[in-house]
Amino acid sequence: MSVMRWIYLALAVWGAVHPMYYFVSWFQENGWNLGAMIDAWYVNDATTGLTWDLTIAAVSLTIWILAEVFVRRNWHALIAIPATYCIGVSCGLPLYLFLRSKPIT
Image (cartoon, rainbow, N blue to C red; front, side):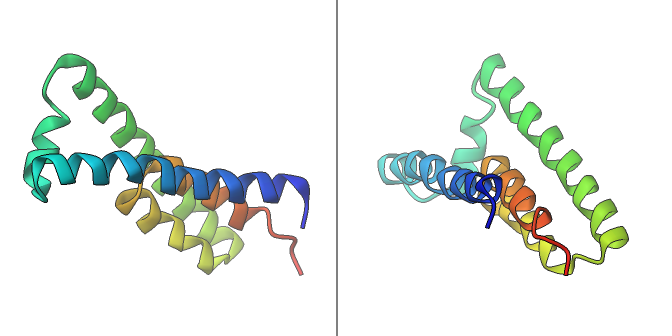
């Protein structure tokens, strides 16, 4: 496996674990209420801007994944879409790059 593939995989793992630490900490402190967490994303202009930034990035990544998967027939790369929306762009993007950079056989 190439060095870049290892880097993408490491970033995908980091992008899954590191943000999840903060999400779980928030839930433990404020209760396991997803609606309250979503409300917290819009508490001020800074968090609202960041929320929209990540949402637009997630939609863009999804469109890119779908466009490439249908051309490349790399169907297993579709797993990056639920990773993006269930974990975050910080996991979904490097995961997709890892899956996309697999040598063609």
